[in-house]
Image 1 (cartoon, one colour):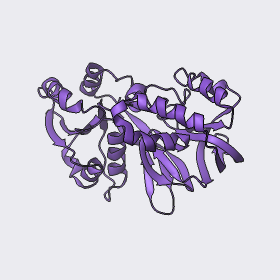
Image 2 (cartoon, rainbow, N blue to C red; image 1 turned 135 degrees about the vertical axis):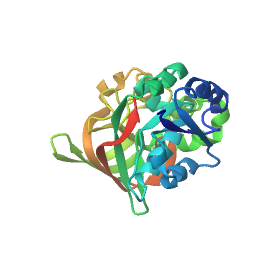
Image 3 (cartoon, rainbow, N blue to C red; image 1 turned 135 degrees about the horizontal axis):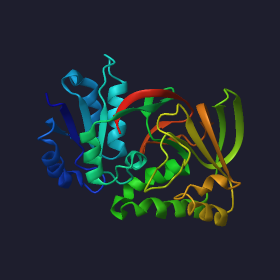
Amino acid sequence: MNKKILLIKNPISGKKISNIILPKVISKLENIFHLEVIESEFKGHIEKILHSINIKKYDCCCVIGGDGSFHEAINGLMKRDDGMSVPLGLIPAGSGNSLARDLNIIDLNLAIQNLIKFNTSYLDIVKITNDKEDIYSFNIVGWGMVATVGQKAEKYRWLGTNRYTILSLFEIFFKKINKAIIEYTDINNEKHILKGEYMFAAICNTMHTGKGMKIAPNSKLNDGLLDLVLIKDATRFKLIKLMSKLFSGRHIYDNIVKYVQITKLKLNAENKSLLIDGEIKGVAPFDLSVIPNKVKIIN
């Protein structure tokens, strides 16, 4: 009996390419799987769908969208009252596509073949807790300049993915330093406290972020660890030079970068904004921990 797959398409992800690629996806899959297609209608709709739908009907849910769409799918499953889940698949149609890069399915044909093979593995999930809510992440939790650029990028979507580089250069030029107290638990279960001035902190579960930047080159999707990337205060020239190393992952060897693998973290700062999986949501102070092997994905 053919597996039944729920395809959820986000029509506005990236440059709205999901609308273009959907017919090809259906034509490649319809003779192999029984398909049901739903189009999300508003921000947060994918989360609502997977939170309330009768998930037992499906063998898999495949998101056609970007990291923000996948973030909604993760939160929908994690917040279900019945605890039910299905494997999640991904057809990348976003602007950053961090998870697709980690899975090596950035090419549409590779993503479709990945779904057809239907091999599964598990994905670690990050739980972020503050006074208001619990939020779940699979990709990156960013604070400081990372969040500021993400917030401003929403207003400059017409620049495409180049907006992140351009806005980052502006932030470096004006160089707003953020004070923070960061407590983390390392892989040996030892606790550390850092107090200082930082450009940004990124807590990563994926290797990639943005348009192919290897922000956490040692990160793995299911190793039970998170990678903390902390950029200290430095001169504008030093920070601009560092940016060029982000795509190769060589930035972690720079003396203004602290790179360490962790299991838990607390961050308290006056700058409240957070960037979670490419979306501005959540606030500091917050607690963060990894939930190993929590969600099954098609890989």
